[in-house]
Length: 207
Image (cartoon, rainbow, N blue to C red; front, side, top):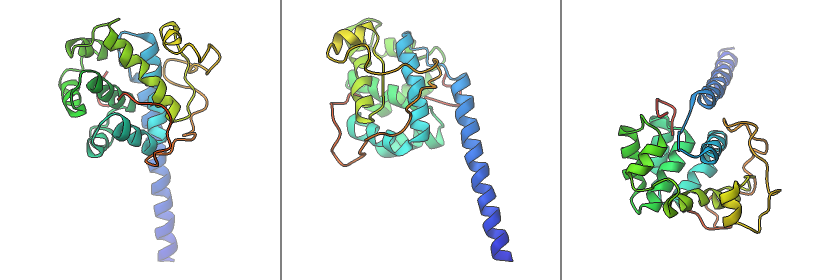
C-alpha cells in the first residue's frame, strides 16, 4: 500500500509540475514583449518562445551548435534565470553579429533590459535598418529551417530569399507566437544532418 501511495503521489507531483510549466508558458506569452523595434522580429521571437519552451533540447542544441553559446550558459539562462527562449536566441544572435561571446550580450541584457531589445541592440552597435540588423534578421530563417518549422517572410526577407516565395509558410496566429506546426520537425540535434547555415529572454522582468 505504501508503494502504491508513493507512486500515486509522484504521479500527482508530475502533473502539478506539468501544469505549472504550462501556466508559466501562458503567462510568458501574455506578458512578454521584446520591443526589438521591428514587428516581424517581435512576432517570431514570440513564436520562438513557444518552440523553445516545448522542445527545449533542439532549442539548446541550436544555440550551442550554430550560435556559439556554451551549453551551460544556455541552460543557466533558461532554467536558473528563467529567460524566455526568444531572449536567449536574440542575445546569442546579436553576439554573433557584433563578434562577441554570447555571455557578453547576455550579461549586458541582464543589466540593461528595461528599454527593450531595440535600444540594447543599438547600444551594442546594431542600428535599425543597418546591414548588421538585416544580417541579424536573416539569421532567423536558417534556424527555422533546421527545426523544419514554418516561418513567413516580410518584404525585406523576401528580397533576401527570393526563391522562397510568399506561400512558403504561415504567420503565427498573433504576435504572442500562437502558431500552428509547433513540433520539432526534422531537427537532428547534434547529428550534423541539419541544413542551412546558422547565425545566433525572459521571464523575470526582461520585457
